[in-house]
Length: 337
Image (cartoon, rainbow, N blue to C red):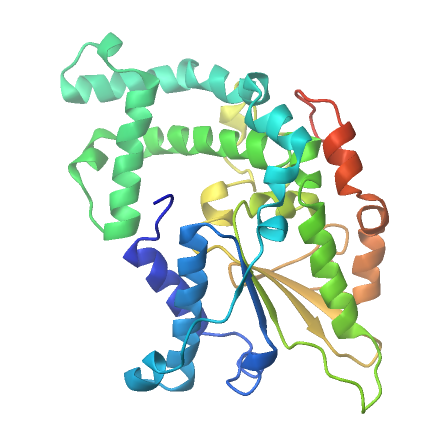
């Protein structure tokens, strides 16, 4: 089965639910009005199920009999919303299937920094360098990383690398994420327009003035999917002044774009709408930590109308069909936001 969720992944989603930042919104009484949508991918469905298990534990700690008697999980599978990128021809053909889209990654893979890593790893193994390809070096690094992050094991693979090696290999991963799922190509961010519009429609509905007799809005909308870097790039987040390329590794040590920190396991992005005297205010949290909106950096929670004004060109003008069908394929550095 494609992409099954390991036990560590279930635990991460479960713990995310047991430490809610806004317990009154995710209360047991409110849960019938909370919407949960997920991609059809096995790991996403398992994640949303683990999240619901965690909520049960939060409401009734230790009551395992109650947890198992609640009946089937309540969530909606919605690939049209949560796997939006698959429907975007410009992204699929122009980035995912286009060899030139990751040109920076390929050049770095065979550049001097990776060559130095190959040489050091070959020396530690006692092998001639030509026997050790960049792909083999990266595979060993991933084995080390996965066993450490999933099983908490400092495996033998990790002894092949020192800190400098790890930084080079981390940079290669960041290059790939940047040029495939972030600011490297305009279409990458624009492919997430359906999700972007859905989020703001939900916020509009929640912040709309209403009479006491009106039905209250849903307390929370929970979406479980993939490719969190795509919508974050549309928001203009983590965009360094100088983009990462194959030949500027030495000047990128202070970069804000670090995919391992932006999208770790159980990565999450929260939009929190507050009812305030001057009008609704919106706070953005990434991985449960506050992040300020680009262009509105003076406030943690700016007025919602100001956030809307900042992104009005996308809210009014980001037409998914036109962008995805009409944009030429190929390498197109992003100059927006």
